[in-house]
Image (cartoon, rainbow, N blue to C red):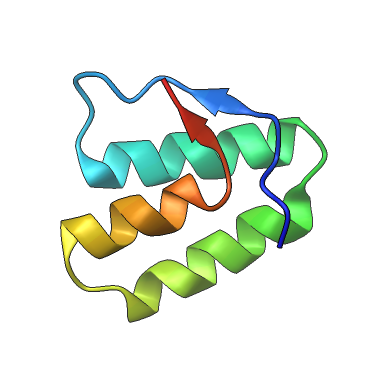
Length: 62
């Protein structure tokens, strides 16, 4: 999968807030199918570190 050019500010957010923001940004920028995929994939990643790496596959964190 190719990473999008979307940038998400990660400062001061919990991993759950970061995932929610990322899903919203993906939908807002026309990547609804990726938003669905991210939402589904987070079910299989248990630790915050794993979930953070997953988010980084979709967007650039700033």
